[in-house]
Structures are given as C-alpha cells and as structure tokens.
Image 1 (cartoon, rainbow, N blue to C red):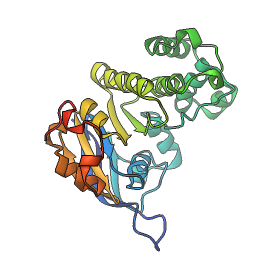
Image 2: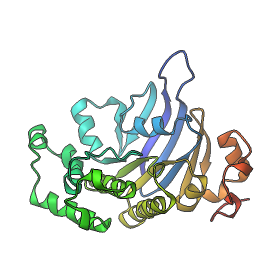
Image 3: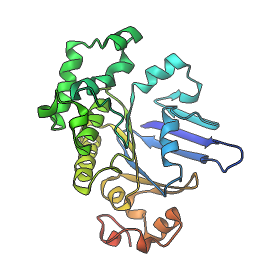
Amino acid sequence: MTLLELKNVTKHYSPAVAPALADISFSVNEGEFISVIGPSGSGKTTLLRTINRMVELSGGEITFAGVSISRLRKSELRKLRSKIGMIFQHYNLVDRMSVIENVLHGRLGHKSTLAGILGSYTLAEKEQALRIIQMLGLDEYINKRCDQLSGGQKQRVGIARALVQNPKLILCDEPIASLDPSSAKIIMDYLKNISRDLGITLLVSLHQVDIALKYSDRVIGVNRGTIVFDGKPDELTRERVSEIYGFDAGDLMINLGESEGYAS
C-alpha cells in the first residue's frame, strides 16, 4: 500500500536563485527502504524536510497515510509528526541528558504540552524505551550522558528516539556522514533490520553510492532539485550514476563496479 506520495513538489528559498526542489513527484510503499543519493546541494535534505514540514513547500502536495500534509494546522501537524521519525546527521541530542532521557523525548509528540514540560512518562513508555535501548545494544549506557558517547553510539540513541515514537516512516538525513566506516556499517545494518523486521518505511539520504546499492530496495537520484533516477539498485548503471552526479562515475567510488547488486 502507498504510504507517502509527493506530487509536483517545489521549494524556492529565494526568487533570485534556482529552486531547491523542482516538480518532484514519487510515491513510497509501506515497508520500503529507499535511499536518496546525489551531490551536495542537490536537494536531498530539503526533500526529506518537506515531508514532515520542517521546510514548508512552495508548491505541490504531499500526502502521508492518506492525509495532505500541506493543509494541516499546527496541532494536526504535531499529531502527524508523531508518526514520522527523524534521524539527523549530527544526532540532535541533548548532550547533558542521559541516553534514556533522550530516547524518551521521542514520546513528546504523543503528550500534552504540560506533560512534556514536566517530563512525565508512563511506566509503559519507560519500558518500551528500555526494550529499544537494549535492542540497539545500548543498555550499558542507559544512564550515561550523551556527551560521553561516541558518534556511532549517539546515532543509535537517535534511532532509538525515533523508534519509541512507533513511527510508520523514518526520515534519515545523512545518518552516517559523520561516522567512520565501521560505525557506519553498524548503523546501516540496524536501519536495514528495522525496515525488514519491523516493517517500518525508511527514506535515507546518502552520499555513498555503494552503500545505497547494498542496503536499498530502491534508489532515487537527485540533481539540482529534480529526480534523474528512480529504480532498483541493479538498474543503477555507471552511466546513470554519472547522470546523477554530473561527472564520470568511474572516479566516484573505489570498486563501485564490484558492489553487490551493481549493474555494470
């Protein structure tokens, strides 16, 4: 079933420059793992942030779970955002707070303003947070401040915070860009398991073409605010990668042609 649909989405930050997004249209089915790739400044982050209205549209329409996002009032938008998790490149955690406190922040969209201010969480919410923390291998850090964690550990906290929302969709904005290769693999493995085992839809922006090929059910290539590729990983030829990035893909990735699922 279709979970998310974008129709003719545009975003202008300034009338003096080219649009960040220009006539973007695609749909996403429940449970899909989709990577969005493209050069820096191509519109990947803007695209993800229009979906939960962290960035307002200039035109077009986005429908999530049958609801038109662009038409929602503030209170309705808050409720809808509780079904859309977000994972950030730079984690977006409260460093002085513990792992469990940061994870529980994912429940704020489900609570009244007063309950959120007071940090009032039910026993069921705390038990759910603990289960997710354990699932992500963070149980020994549960009471540790987040500023004492490594980058990979912080990103797992960010994943846990998104999961505790019970989301239908998780948007991942360059989730491994700040990580070393070993930590990046751990994060991508967790994201793939979440998609496969929990049936949660993931839309992940990435710079690394080889990783997109390995983990994705589908790849969307963006250049200058437009979609130039939308297909399965084995359809992403070297020529199509060159089209996405605007130069010869032969120099883009080491051993790209040997990546699993790559079509030469």
